[in-house]
Image (cartoon, rainbow, N blue to C red; front, side, top):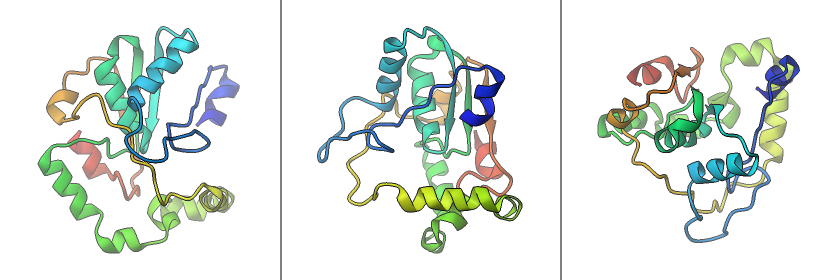
Length: 182
């Protein structure tokens, strides 16, 4: 998304969450702090008081937690293509029905890239596959950071910042019926 926003004169800041991309994680044991705390510390360091937050996929988990913890710093919130980390039992059951063993056995590009995208943008699909091939191994994965909040739909209802949820109609992790639950 950075390539779409930056030429339009938006200041775009992207970062690797702890243990992802090129960031460093504690090799064993719990990670220090939370993703929301790390993002808040980054905004403090950059001296950014208020900003628009976009969380995509796993970044949506941190975005919800940040909005619940530091909402006064947000101008708006966008959560795209994310299961969101909601802990409500009925939501968790819906995700279990969605992510069957057969689903999880599919190649990553079949799970992650919609069929329309693979057909319409073969160069983009190949670039995604290259990123997937060259990404650091995910096993053994260091333990993830904890969250500041136990995210539930009732707690999400307390967010008062303007919020946009979106997903693709062929998104297999966060399809429209899942996003409608939000």
